[in-house]
Image (cartoon, rainbow, N blue to C red):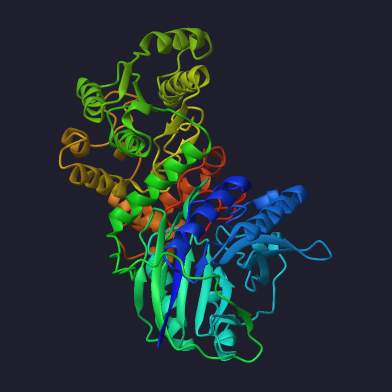
Length: 559
């Protein structure tokens, strides 16, 4: 019996950084070689970063990625590497490809068969599907390679590869995070391993890219349909595992000779990394997505409007962990409508987080606006326009700080607000990144409690968590003056937004038919606002952004 040592290099690439991605791939290939692995696999399209989207229409970009792939091939020594890149066919067609590199050259290229074209995926826009494969033999152990979606197809290429003699299947993926997806992935991988009677090594990308977060969680599954080893989530990792296999000859296999053993490290078989509890998973995704958006786009500092409410408190706490308290600035901008309690809570939160804090009363600016507008609104009562004006003044202050000092404005609106339009265009929606855009209000409370448990102290003051939520744009205002209770609202939003359910399908839950229809109407009328919102971390199976493409002009109403 011989152990076949594989390495799964769960790395964080950056879209378009071809040279940087090359260096990172090479670094992890060397780490795997030193660990004595025979084969190392890196994620789907690791050379380009994923997803490159319409960069693929630039011929020079595709050529550059092919040149980088060839450079990687020349520089990988002593190990076989499976590397994701974009290949070009003879007629100019593009392929989502996996190169098999050995002994300083590309010895085989596999083209992805199943091109996803749902949810955030748009691969049929760019790629031509492949239809073939080869069985490769590393030191007498037959293995095969496929790419991401290929492993999700029942009776697909994985089964054909196993029937052709593969004992190990390596799947390179860039599978984005959403709540509950990691469990679904592992069930799929185990099902494939069991049905093909092979060992499956699945390597996934990790890192943030615009709205998407890739959570890693690479695994090895055995023929019994069980997870044998699991990499960490939301961080880079190198999972090295010994597969007990008897080498055998396979007809027509492409033979690859080992470049020689590396510095074999004892005890490399990874014990189980336990699955994360749901709230830790959501927090980890939000943290990683926020950090990578800030860092990969070259921002050094971020600025947040601190209202003394729970949404801005959570965003500030996440920002501090993402880039450090020294790089976070909080600004409170009270008017006559802000209670002393919320103002003091904003100060206390800033002190707890150790961030730079400014308090800029905007009452003089607000008065100046009201006086300037007064001749045109004579005799009309104070209302929505005056409420939204306060939010827009605050947005202007934040964007001015951003322009003056190069700080990124992090917006603080949650999914419940974005869904129902309980937010102000060019006001609290102003900014560069929306950290909790896909997090419902009820989960904001859960995450805030988790922040405090994690810290072992009340980073977010209990007064903020316990206070009834209010925009404080008029005296004694409460969110529930305009919206249903958040536990009821969020249940309807999950049904309508994330599951596309009709009123009849949602009936019988906590919300009445009247409330359900009212919420649906608010969602439908607010599409124009969401189109103008900044990007934010995708958490759910249907987030506003890439997942949500409804027409602005739309008269359809569910019966």
